[in-house]
Length: 444
Image (spheres, rainbow, N blue to C red):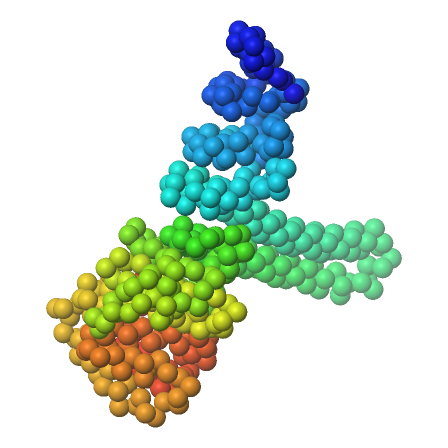
């Protein structure tokens, strides 16, 4: 390792200058500039390490071990909380997840650790956000690459089948021409086989076109879903986030997106709302750790340890407790869907959470009719289906309207699209029809 001569400052400077001059000619200008900028934190860097370091040009750039901690330049930048260095190294292609230091941390997990150690320092939080964004982009690129490779494989298979059929037809025609003695015997084949071959080729061409169309549709849908889920993840803060917690929250959004158009439309609407946000605690059965006190839509004040979900209309934010060992996934999904729906409807109509505009008398009449049906049928609905009874038990008219408007998404999120819709058609058909005809089109 290059050592400092503590007794002679000029010798120290000569050693530092020699360290960077030794590699200056073999590196891009921007990379050498970054090394010079970071030199105050790389006292133990060896000239041999930099000589072996390749110029950043691939996904592995900036990933060789260059310090006594066994980390990379990106580890050094993360540990110092220097966002400018982190952005430069990520721009050069450094990976947030590929290499580990001597303690076993990747740059991403090291950033999570630094946030835990410095919870009040926003610089470390900004560094973590930059690394997560690149990690998500890399994951999306890999998934897209695998999907395209599968598409190309299907297309190649169809092409090979077409070539085989064409070769078989050509071989038969060549045999008929070359064997005059068999011409009469095979006359019938001569007239019928090419027609069959042409029909077969036409059929394969049609199948190929349909396959390509289906692949294109699937590609567009998958891209739209991935883009929506990634945007929702960027709006979500996870308490004491780990890779496992991040994966679980992403799974939660994916299940909501794929459940039904009633739930996917909520994500599509909220992803473009810049002020909207979500805070999730995956280790608790209540929101006391992320929302100690709140006032519900009826104006009642509660402490966070009394509930697992809250839709804050003033902050435009959802607070969710999602401890899987305490709640079933279906319960977490239905509560989350309800809170998302209540905020989306509040922001859509600007009418204190009611599912209609002040001047829209037609929607008001239709919703009042649906409410009257729900109130009349609430005692006939089995007790195991409590969403309607919970809604009509709210203490104020505003609370009842806002809570009842979210019942359709609770049904599909808990029981699935098919069963949830069948139950609503049996329990509250007018409420389902109101949501589909009045709320859903506006969300789109």
